[in-house]
Image (cartoon, rainbow, N blue to C red; front, top):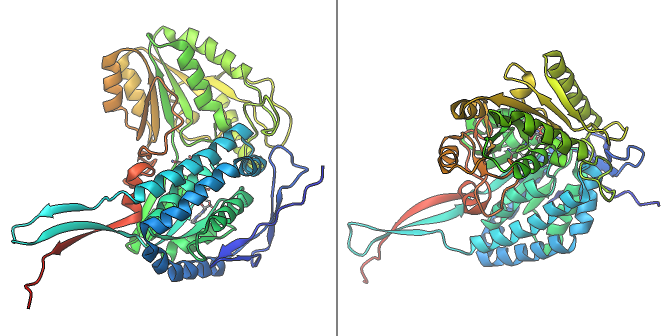
Length: 485
Ligand code: NAD
């Protein structure tokens, strides 16, 4: 089959531009190295600056359009995400590698997010307070933050940008979006869709190219806030630059998420959740299960069943029927995972499972399960791939202490039917997302999402009605009528 390679382009002020001061790059399909997905231009700091200028120019009229006008456009976008779900899913799978079902799930949730945030923006969040002065009222109103930079990773190339773009637009902001370089054409498809839905010129600007372009947006004084999802190192740099110039910053960074399995757990549930949580999306989720903490005698049976679960996974091209786990995103990502696994073995980790269905190829890596302790680097540092470690403890106190013994605090899960342990988990696990008898992965778009410690710092939560905390400014107005003349 021949397919015309889609051409990538920046979207600036409503115009598509293939200006390539940094040259041209090729978006690769990690499952099919011989079938590049398409070409795209690499911009530079000038491209980023032009996009910021376009956003500044467009923001006032987008704000003046009001909640209702903006919501109508966003509702059309939701319809288009549903209608184009298959097309978006195919592009996402070709660039990122995950299975078509996983990619399609992103597109469908993107539709839901647009619908939800459009509706939410129409629900008043203003508050009224009494005052001590006769005839006066105090009101809080929400103004848009203004011009926002949105910098996103490749692992959820549809949904993570939409988590940010939808509330940004709903509350009257103009956006400069810098997506990750592994998934540029998925971003182009989303920007096209939003243009087709009626988002006016300059309100959403897309720039393609290296991380330094994100850096240029972040440093630009005209950008009121930056919402970033990605690695801890880059997140910290962004935080320092934005806060130094009094901008607002939102960060969603890495994780090292524990799953505690107590002796009374429903093991069918726990095994399915731990295997899916660790290996789903090829372990390339910030919420992936990195440590499985077995409490007491359940350890051996749990390991046996986890081994079977890992062996039963079918690894292959995400476009092929029956495949549950796709490739890693790039040969570089594979090299990083492979090095981390070799280091774990050299540090004494016991390999208990290596999936046998994994095809050859520069990006495929077999889901791997270790048994080991806290002395292993892999049980402390995030390895972004299908690798997890079972750790044994003897007591409940040790389980909670080990779960929290990490610099991260994104998600955590616990398997038990004991109400005391459940209550303790909900109150004592240091994670922004806590699941009881569920996987560390997965969240719903109408509930707050975010982490603690190095996973998010003190940033405002994303999603749900908390998303507006980042994308709006609260103003307090004291209003009293003058006396008639
Ligand atoms: P990354 O930090 O390398 O890149 C993220 C984005 O930042 C990309 O668009 C990149 O081009 C841009 N960037 C790079 N350098 C920059 C700079 N100096 N200034 C501004 N922008 C810059 O991350 P990645 O490899 O794309 O994604 C994987 C990481 O993301 C993992 O650590 C994962 O845990 C994390 N992640 C976190 C969440 C969450 O919600 N907490 C979700 C998904 C992924």
